Image (cartoon, rainbow, N blue to C red; front, side):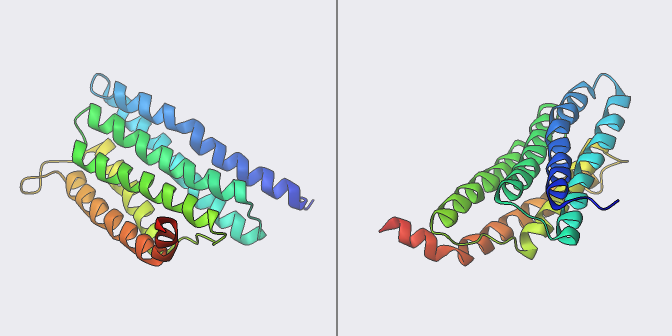
Amino acid sequence: MIAQPGAHVSILLGITWVRILLVPVVMALILLGPDRSTAYTAAAVFFVVAGATDFIDGYLARRWARTTTFGSFLDTTADKLLVSGALIALVDVGRASPWVAVIIIGRELLILGLRGVVAAEGTVFAPSIWGKLKTNVQFVAILLAILRFGDPIGPLYLDEWAMIVAVVVTVMSAVEYLTRFSSALSKGAN
């Protein structure tokens, strides 16, 4: 039986909603982590499942050639909620630095605002390779921070090194978007 096009959109939205609903679950498990080591493992599993929904809905949307404005908005919002929620919880338990969270969450808010300006101009805000790389690097860094393997490598743990890479890629993606859509910003300043 072949699903109808409307069913495809419903499936894609459902997958994205799963990611959003997993955000408080991941956060709660991270916050329980210091007292219960199995909570970190469970948080990591749910974080991987939530992250996988991003790849699954993207793959299916391309395969089925089904995208909607609401679906695109919800997908990017789900990513931002997952990353921001996990980072906030990791800062609370001492597994992420506040400055890392400020830069990453600040970038997300900045680009969200830029998306609004660009949309008001009637321009399509297509994702870039930097934006996709940013998401992947952030997901890996957060997963490593939840699990925190082994001893430090020099002055930092592996996850802390990964967070630094995530910050660099996050800033680079913001610069790329701001450069690409600078004309929309300059129009708004006049």
